[in-house]
Image (cartoon, rainbow over all chains, first blue to last red; front, side, top):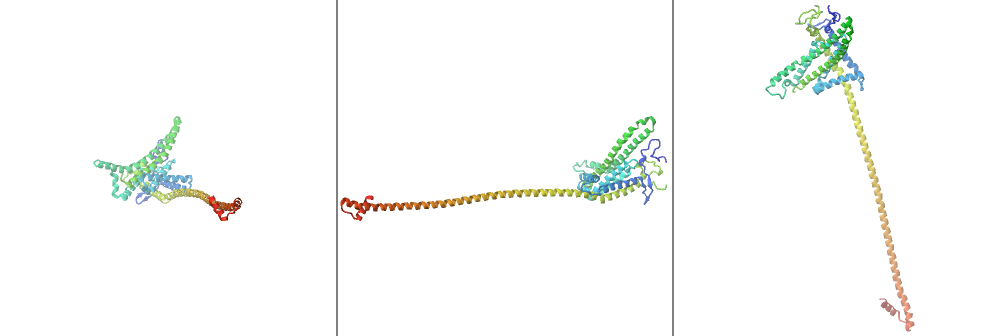
Length: 258
Length: 180
């Protein structure tokens, strides 16, 4: 067991160690590895915190909201406005989906800022699954609503006929690459942010134990503090961007003709 | 290998010690996705069935309440304006009424004065004509008396002068001839 304590192997703490999946409760369902992992634990915490917060905030159902109730209402109206603005009134049928995505990602990211916790969104599999969920929702609801008319999405109006094949090809490629960019953006941001945090934290730990150079310790500490603030921003921003892009993609499903 | 970490085509490795970069490790994708499906599905159901309707209800209720209050304020404002208009109408009516009454009174008084004037005028006229008639009468009577006096005087006068007294008829004829 080389990487037991914090992955410290050669003095420098391993910044990758935090992303390791640990099987807390090995489990197999229908030949599928369904082990209860640390990731699953944090997903459950995320769900509990999200639902608990919203229910606790609205327990009074007061006409004049308390501070915490205002917070829940702001989140609600923030997402509702986002959906309405970018996907129109018809987009409101997807409001619960977008709200769940936003809150799940936001709370998971916020919980990941607690030192020693696991970052659910730092695994490409998770973000890819969420992005594919959106992708599938767009295609299925688009086909249900417009049938073959959904393919108009790839045929922009007002384009001369001789460049149309090229434009359509580009549209198709860009459409297919959506889930990739959608998922990688979130995953890479969270991964890189937490690695950077860990690296600067590691520097501080290394410096403080290095005799003369210990005087330089405040530098990486300040950096870590600054990056912590930045990471809080990124955590929110990535949840926002993910929800925003979801709305824009859903808009395509509802209004395929450009 | 108590638990099957290698679910499929991944490169086989020891489960306890990750060889691959953990975030891209294919062997841990399956359990993550299983639990993602469970937790995300649960969160979706909890939010869409319970939490979101609850928040939406509160917001909706507040919006309704504010709208109601605004509506009633609007209604009350309308009522105030109506009352004000009614008051002004009543004021104008009363003023017009007062004017009418004043005019009527004035007219009536003027009429009465006119009638009285006319009556007095006629009375005066009647009195004047009566007086004139009496004056005429008196004058005529006086004139007749003059004739009588004259004839009364003429008889003795002639008798004194001529010695024969003329008859009454002769005197009258002579006097009538004289006065013509």
